[in-house]
Length: 399
Ligand SMILES: Cc1ncc(COP(=O)(O)O)c(C=O)c1O
Image (cartoon, rainbow, N blue to C red; front, side, top):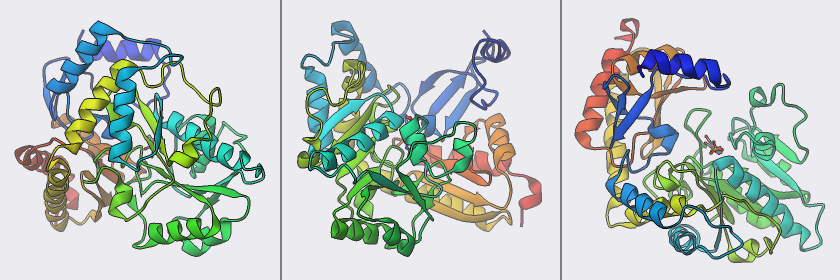
């Protein structure tokens, strides 16, 4: 089937909830993708920070194949060895404490919301049930995650949202302080806002937010679904800001493309999920956990994360140099290999032109061009991507 046939089939049989770009990839290798016609692309999106180790990573493929031969699924009514091993690696690599596995980011946030409320309820404090979230945040598409998402455009047509979510302005510590009351059970925050365009909090904001939470006995929940798993050059982006959260949610890069989400909570808080309190039929699937083990072992290997940081600096420098030759780039922002251009113009057409030239990047939030290459991207690939980006930009924006 060629790309045109695949597009026609998609349009005939699938709901049109995704604004899909006109490409159909059939194979990948490292940072490269190949379409139905065999054309090669450089993948600087990685399934939106999902394929952390690149496509068809040999170790992931091997682990998944071996696990698939042995056992595809077993109920969580039983012990699952590969799941327990992945949990140990994840706990050790993050905040310690205990892990709950699910299948996606939004499910991880649902679980974190339930866990935080249950922790207070177990202490006879049912009234402490509110979540404070930020304008511009994105926490998922199910009703808990959607209600926590501080962007009304995602709510439109799906109201009413769930009660118990209070949205405060981005970067305003006084507003946060005022919103954290005796009804607040947690402050739920992305260390860097991903979907709204790689938005960094003002310096010191997150650390001050953590201090306020501690002072008021409120839980700090970091949504590291996009920023976690080495993306910013640390296992958790929170580390880069000196944070020690009570609960962390993860997904995306955790299993290099297989559906897995996770909540990691301090041991004392994790205890609120007693038998029967929460669950998922597929959560922590053995094949997904086999992939996660490889991802976690790779991220823990000596020098891996510092390489992410170094390559992030190279990409950031390259993006800054290109930006200096243009009138339509306002700012380069981000950390590690989570970077973006804030532009003067809409970026949708630029991302499309990049795609035509063999570079996969992402237009988000109107004027943002986002770059999320695999963490294993090489320096020559970064240079090539910058060349492809340059030839894809409109002539009008040159200095
Ligand atoms: C920060 C953040 N939280 C939650 C989600 C939702 O994850 P999923 O699409 O796996 O449900 C996303 C997805 O983009 C995200 O970036």
